[in-house]
Each structure stands twice: as structure tokens, then as C-alpha cells.
Length: 551
Ligand SMILES: C[S@@+](CC[C@H](N)C(=O)[O-])C[C@H]1O[C@@H](n2cnc3c(N)ncnc32)[C@H](O)[C@@H]1O
Image (tube, rainbow, N blue to C red; front, top):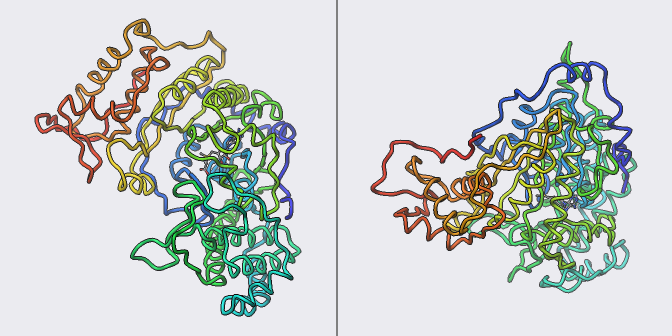
């Protein structure tokens, strides 16, 4: 595996290379007056080839939403950081918008996806297409033989390099790595990888490996075809139920055609990124050219201590989407890829992961401490007079309390909280379930003032009162003067912010059943088709979600 040229752990050097004009600009104009984004932005998930379809990952924010936030809260030449970067949506969009991007994630597999998509160093897609033809020449015939005959597959396995047959996470259906594949799948993938590994150019090799790595998601026994659609349409349980669950009847998709399809997606992504580079080069008075070696820094560090390797007060905007409690155990679930791609996961990284549960049995306390530390270190990295957006969703009010309390204790001011619902992923989850599923997310935006003031505590005096009375009162407040219909997510998020303003967030718990019963008791009914709550006797004529934010 090549180390891409831009994989650099010397964050400090990257950040201290300021360009003069940018420094001048940022010194002059205060950013306190930036109008915060106060409305949801409809997600356009299918739009960007560079993010969707290239490679599955557990969660991914819609590119157009992230783009809108970066454009609003930062300027060209700025340093934009995502400490929980995942597959790099924030950093890739930041780089394409002329910012200097810092992408950080503990998961090397996520960093590989981000770095490979972001790589602008190929002169064109031509070398990539040529390399693909070489792989086809070497593999297509042997793959046909392997697929026709299990004995041929087993023979091929004897002479092709394979990773070690390690143990899988405890809750997997299969005990060992090789149990995830049929002999044909294992041999076919090994054969393709061997041919790709022979490619001499690091950028070309990584792009092919990205297509290969995306093929693994379809060529293993956790892949389940979607009912009523072509066999190749569907997904792996690893990304849907977040577990290595073997399909009761696994399908054997054609290996070459699967790889070819993934390669077409990588090629489309690469074209998009290279076109952005060309476009910038051709803009006569355009500011900066696009070069991932200079503008895309990849770090693989614990977000909780990232301020140890980047300079404090050196980042201009942070947009980040931390793990949501115990939903997804990223490092455990990525073992299939990290292991075969040859990315070791240290015990230290496992210890540092910001999750609840997993192989390490991380506690709630570990999660909250890690989340709080990462927010603290992010705010330390942010220059004064700059903005920070955190994406979050969970039923546990105390997690929101951790985020809001830590940010405000660090002197950041809460400026906006927006409910984002309604994209493809959201409706998929919702179809299966109902009122009590929170499938959207809240984007919480803070401003770090120039002068550090005493920590901004929320107003209100309710902390001393009976929590259930406060909750009931807050439900009433959120529902009065509302609109004719609203989603569970919008109301829940509004409750979070109201409770925060009343200093009651940290001392309350609210479970899904209680949430639903509060609404039903007040005469609201849930429509599982529209996912909206409404009341027959209450027609205000106002449409849309309840206003979430009040300053
Ligand atoms: C919700 S995902 C981010 C997804 C990303 N916004 C995207 O659009 O692709 C959270 C990420 O945090 C990473 N992570 C978990 N704990 C971490 C830690 N302590 N430091 C850095 N990254 C961590 C996980 O590997 C995962 O990729």
C-alpha cells in the first residue's frame, strides 16, 4: 500500500504556512456578524459522484449540506478541520471550495477512502483507465475459471497471497475472517488484489484498490440482495444493521463485473475531482490552484487530543459529525477492510475510540469524556472569531448536555441549532419504523468570540424544580403556537434546546415511549406515511417544522 504523498502527520507545519493575503483579510473583518444558517437544507444525496456510490461507509453527511455550511462559515484559503472525518465529506468539500482541509479519523480505512478520493495528482483519468485494462487482461480469464469450478478456486487460493485468518468481533455470525467468503469470492478478490498491487504508480494503485475495496462489500456472505430488485442491488449487513450477520442464502455476484461497476464509480469520482482542479486552473484571476498534496492533510489521531499535534488557534472552521453513542462500533466493523488492506489497528486506537460498547466494552462515561475532550480540543484549535458546527442525534439527552456544556464552558456561544431530516437514509429508516425513531440529525453551530468571556451558562431557573414538571411544561411550550404538522426529530430537538435554556437538560431522561405518550396525551397523532404529528382540532394554517432556535 502506498503512502499517498499528502498523508502527513506534521499538522503544525501545514498550518503555519499561512498565505499573507488571507491573513490580512482575516485580521480585518470580524466574523461575528455572519448570519447563521437557521433553516434545514434539503439533502441532495445523489448529486456528488465523489461521495455516493464510491464506497459504502457507516454514515456520511450529504455533500450539499456540508458545502453550504463551509461556504457560510469560512472563506477561501481558510483552514477547515473535521476531527471525526469519516470518508472525508467535510475535508473534500472544503478542499474543492479552495480551503485548506484537515481530515482526521482514527479509522485508517476511512482515511484511505478520503485520501484516495481527494487525490488531485493524476494528470487525467487516462492512466487509471489504462491500469484497469491491465488488471482486466491479467484477471478476467482466471476469474471465469474460478467461478465455474470450486476446485479451481481452491487451487488458486494455494498460490495467491491472503491475509491472516484472524478472529472476527464477538457478535459476528462467522468466527474467522475467511468464513465471510465462499472459496470463489476469496480467491477472486485475492487474485484482483495481487494484480492491482503490481501497479507501480501509487495514486493509480490506490484508486484501483478503492474499487476493489468497495467490491468486497458485495462479494462476501454478509451481502443481501434487495427484494424484488437485481441480485447486485442490496447491501452488506455490516452497513445496515452494524453487525457481521451472514445472509441466510448468500448470493455469489459475478466477480469481474462487480469490480468493473465499482471501478466505474471511482472513475466518475476521480473525473469530478480532476475537473474541479482544471476549472480552478482555468479561472484567469482565480485565487489558488487545487493540489491535494498542499491542501488536504490527513491525520489519524484521537480527536480528544488533536490539539497536541495541531497549533492552538490555527483553524478557521470546524464541521464535524462525531459517533452517536453506541450505534456503530467503527473499528470493530471495519476489520474486514483494515485487515485486508493491511492497515493495523493499534490497541491504543481501540482504547481511544469515542463509542459505547464494542469489543472493548467502552462505558457511557468513557464515551462522554472522550466526546467532551474532543470538543474542548477542537475549540482550542479554533481561532477566536470563528465558527464550529457539530452534527448530532440521540435519544439520550445527557449526550446533548455534554456537547452543549463543554462548548459553552470553553467560551463558545450557541448560535444555531437546526433539524435536518428528509433525506434518503432518513426515509429508509423511517419506513421500517415509526414515531419513535430519530433518524435525522441536529446541526448545532457555535461561535468562538475574540475575547474569552466567562463561560456562557444558559439562562433560566428551572434546574432546582421537579424534572418531570419541567419536561411537561417544556412540551407545552414547544407545542403552543406551533405548526399543523411536525416530525418527531424537530420536536425532540426543540425540546433539547428549550431544556438547555432552562438548565434542565443534564438532569432529565426522556425515553421514546414517554415522548410518544406526551404527544398522544395532548391529542396529537402520528401519521406513519408522512412521518408527521398532527391534531385534528388544531389548524393554524402554518406549515413547516417548529422553529428550533431562539437566541
Ligand atoms: C459519524 S462518523 C463521521 C462520518 C463523516 N461525517 C462522513 O460524512 O463520512 C464518525 C467517525 O469518527 C471516527 N472516530 C471515532 N472515535 C474517534 C476518535 N476518538 N478520534 C477520531 N476519530 C474517531 C470513526 O472512525 C468514524 O469514522
